[in-house]
Length: 429
Image (cartoon, rainbow, N blue to C red; front, side, top):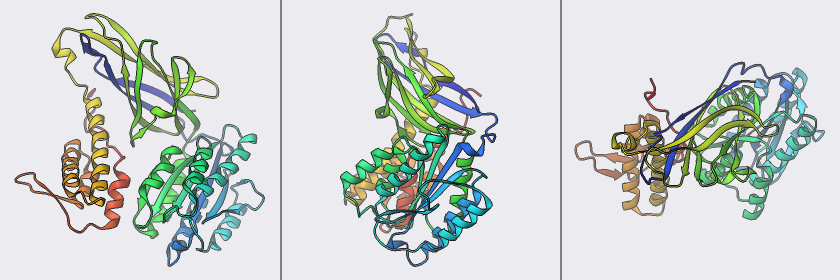
C-alpha cells in the first residue's frame, strides 16, 4: 500500500469573536504504487454505439476500446459494454468479468471490431449494467479496485429523468467512472453529473482520432491505483458546525452532501481509489466565539480505509483567538488561492449559461472577470480557452463577447472550468 501524508495549511489566528475557520488539507500518496496485484483490479469499458456514432466515430471508438484492452495488466478482470438505448455486454459472454490474458484480449478485440452504431442513448442503463458486473465481481474480490470508462457523443434522450436518476443512484459507490464526451453534441452538465457522482473525471475529446491515446492514458492511470477505497474522516467538536468539505485539486468537487455518519461528531466523505498522487481539500468549520488567548481544535481530519477503520494519515484544524491584527488578518495564501479557483469556475459556468440565455450583459461581466482571475492565478489553459469566448481590451480592461464561438471551444471551457491549478510557489518553500 502507498504511504499517505496529510498537511494542513491555514491561518489559525482569529480576531476575538470570530467564528469561521478555513483550512486546505493536502493529502499525498507515495511509495510502492505499482505493486498492486492484478487480481485486485476490475475494469469495464462502456462504448456509446448509438446511431449518432456513425460516419467515422464508431471506428475511432473501436480503436480506443482496443487500446484500453491492450493496456490492461495480465489478470485484471474486465468487460466491454456496448451502449445505446440498451446496455449489452459484448464481452465476455458469460455475464461476468474475464481475466486479461493474451487469449481474452484477442477475443474481446474481435468482439469490439464488430460494434455497429445504431439506436438511442440511455447512459443510466449502461451504468446500471456496469454496476451489476462490479457487484457480482465484488463477492469474490472484495478489495478489488473497480473502474470504468464511459464514452458518449450525444444527449441522454432515451430514458426518463427519473429512470436516469435511479440508475445513477444505484451505481454510486460501486465503482469510479471516468467519462469522455466526443464531438459537440453531448451535454456537459449531464456527463459532469455522472463523473461527479461516480468520483471520476470528465473531459472533452475534440477529435475522434484522439480517443485511442486518451483511453490508453485512462487505463494506465487506473492500473496505477493501489488502494480501492479511501475516505476523508472529519471530526468536529459538539459545539462546532462543519460548513463544507470540497475537493479543490486536481478538480473541484463538493463532497459536503456525501457524508456518511460514523458517530454524532464524525463523518466520512468518499474520495475513491488512490495511486501515487496528491489531492487537496478545502474544509470550513464554524466554531463558537472565543476569548483572546483561547485555543481549540476545530477539526480532526483523517484519511481512512472505511471498511476497516485503518487510519492512513491525520492532521488538525486549529483556532486560536488573538488581539494582534497582524496575525488575525493574515490570509493564508493557499486558502486564498483555492477560494479564487472556486470563484473562477462559478463565473465561467454562470457566464456561459447567461450567454446561452441571451443575457449578454451578465455573460460579459462574468467571463471578463473570470479572464482576470485565470491570468492572476496562473491558470494558463483556462485563460486561453476564455480568449476564444471573450475579448479583453488591453488598454482599458473592458471585456466584449466574441460574436462567433466554436461550439467545441465552448464545450472545452465548460468541461475544464472545474479543473484547478496548484499554486505557482509553495508558501512553505
